Image 1: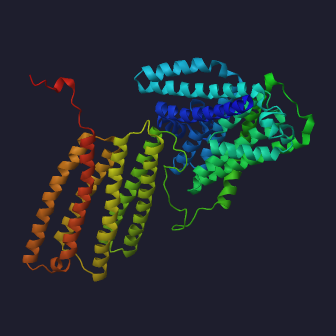
Image 2 (image 1 turned 135 degrees about the vertical axis):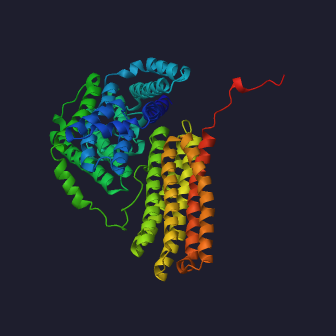
Image 3 (image 1 turned 30 degrees about the horizontal axis):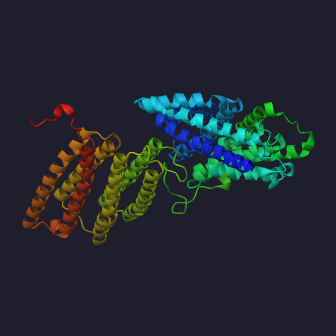
Length: 556
């Protein structure tokens, strides 16, 4: 019975370790939000600086999943290309080994103290920074406590060959299957979404004498490959991020294969550290592996990038994979604040596409360019795709990050996204059809009519610009300006209709030919402006000052 309890304790330690790694990501998100990505982009101007930026960011945020998310999102957004980002990832690989080194230095003995300080900061302070620090300390405490639980349970004899787990698995023979162990570790790191958790498990079991270095070494190599596979999954959708992930994976697989070959050749001659130095040996191997990857990768970034450019060519326009979200990712979200920020940027990207649709549609109207208007219609498919992906991302965020989730911000983002999708449909299904009708009829507006339409369009475009600036900032003054412009545009639209009817009464030929098109364009431009004004109402509602005790009355 005691063996069974010890085995359960080991799994409980693993669970606490995995929870600590996940909670660490949440604490880093609370502490830094989107600033980590901004720092990385600012520092990584050259290859050497990009490498150092990766080291620095990973030291500040020792979470492999967080770094993977940042790398993929930065490349997707176009702030850095795959070649620049690869240097940062190579640096981050080294920086992330610091967490494993802390585990190896037996920081688990200080776990209760770290948790005590973390609880004090997180539970009894109000500032977001102090609470973020508290959450990070709590996460580190959980990680170290999980290691401690595993070590104590393993030391109790659960791996004895005649009892417990040793009666099921022959650990003495398992060390002969280094490739199998490496593959198992890669899958485990992928499932746990953390190489640190996987290697922490190895350190805990190794320090307790449950496994030897010949078993630990291939697991360390496999865990590093598993982290690279995680990055590949996150970045698969777009070409640049896929190239980045494949380059990182290629380097790690090559070094891991070389390492496994050396282990096989050395066999029994491989030095076996004792129990006291086992943890440092595992941490040293982990760090050494990533240093070797960096030494090989940094000088060959250009060669690897050129190779992957041939292996993963840029798809032709219209082909699958040519378009997709730039900022949001599949897989782990990486914290509420970071995720909400990425969703906001994705919506701004959607807004840019819709704005370009309106601009180019009007250009097609003036130049009678049928090909351009068809390209505008194709862009509506992109807007629909982004609309679906962003909504799915935000609803997933509400489920996974309930503790730090901002429901008001989510609703504001969804409202603006919905209005953008509606505007895209108006341009595609209404304005584009009117322009094609005008082109096929070979009709022309009167000089006054064309000037009036241009003036009305420019006023709507101005409101679109105001909305694009009001959305990310939630600025009440911009929202109020948007509403004032809405009233003016409504009045102006009535004036333009009256002028058009006056031209019809005067018997102007062009007015008769394009009357329906002219009036319908006014209607649909006004509808677009109404969609934009809905954002203003949402901002004013969300930022309405809350009543305080000083403004309430007692009724006496």
